[in-house]
Length: 206
Ligand code: C5P
Image (cartoon, rainbow, N blue to C red; front, side, top):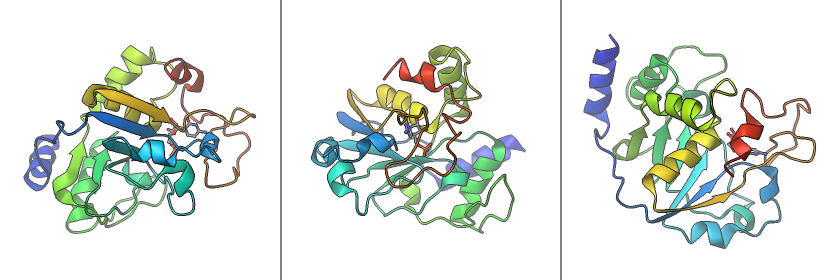
């Protein structure tokens, strides 16, 4: 069953991603500390720009830039992409892989802990699916199994360190109350802190 799904996955999407194009890269987290940073031009000047989940651009260009070559996501945080952006999926469970296949074909009708997009607009030839073993490796080796699982941002960072020669990091870090708030919105849950993630442990590497 799992094998059939994985076989189908690689019939639709490239079995081997292009990992040669990254000389320098910007990994852009969603931290509120990007506000008024004026990092936009520096972020955009790298070959590869990796953003994550719901990262907003419109209205924040001078602080976060405009270029996105890769966007990492999971089904519950999926957003439509333009034709030149790589969709990088971090699957946690087999349903995530099924979602990817169905979101590009029949439409996904399953349920999850929150609403999930039925269809996604993105270039299927630029899809990259990260092996779930990579998440286990990051959790065990980098985070010493602290936190429930690595944050999207930390996974994105370690992925960048594996595929790019030079990695520039922007937009990581909690606000003054210790919450992971976003640069584009006011935090609604003041007790969010770093969610299920080992924020302190992740910070050691930043
Ligand atoms: O909130 P979201 O998961 O979309 O943010 C992407 C990543 O950016 C997080 O997983 C986290 O690693 C990082 N982040 C951060 N500090 C914040 C907000 C996000 O380090 N204030």
